[in-house]
Image (cartoon, rainbow, N blue to C red; front, side):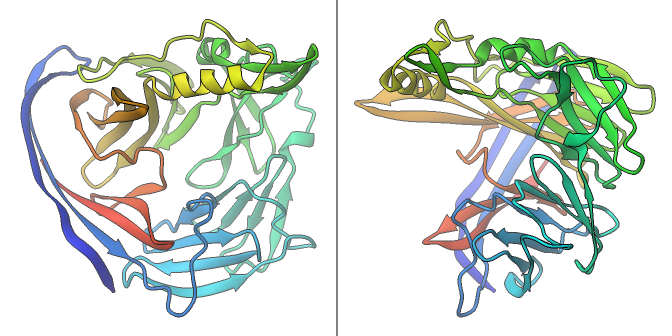
Length: 372
């Protein structure tokens, strides 16, 4: 086990009154330390080119599985000993082929789910047998003509359900809502949600000689927390909550005293030159953006990170990163300045936040220990 610059950040203590969304002022004590730990890969390297883009944690949070798409090897990292413990050779094609996965999930029963843009390939815990669920090719009765499911399916913790947006095939039109797909019998339940019409005005299009060349995609975060499913956007300081017991939707709107609460809708959404579109993206990058919600089951708290331009120094941009903490019922309790790494691969393990860092092309984690 190797440690890099132990206690690289000293203890930060915060004690302040915060107004949560219940409008009650309460004192909240918050402090943390952080260690940067390194994973021993032996004589070889761990694939980090895409920043753990296709990686997943085992349900007991003892192992990290990272796919190397260049050779289709699944790297197994022991998070207890912080060592690369194994490499499992997989196949792209054939009866146990993983295809071109965009994501990897490991369900509570230890099954591996490789998610492509058109199907879910479910492997047993030994990675020896596979079943492909081609959700994009199904004709679901409760979808209207000209409607389909989206591409970015999110799996439930038990691997039995998938959550994905649904709506018109026409990309110029907003999606209608959230679809809940039973992966065992392919039954589909549709739940209209206004968040999809609200994010549509942020879509940008690039035309050349009057012909559409490319269009941005405005997606949502979909996160499961027990019987609840959280649907949120990088553009809003809000969350929609699906209660799967009652199929009811609730909506919480939060307020930050440290950042903006929403990203401005762009004044121009159609561009005819690369330079115009690049300038628009640069301006948008400086505006507020929110991460997904992370649940710390050890401390029973939700966490969300945000980032916004703080100031300009010449041509350089200095950003302000903020963490917001909520109780288990998603009542806002505290917000504070936090290290600027809000969109990397991260997870909670035993009440500590593990955040991926690349140190000279070697795998490391900034491990945050909190005091409340």
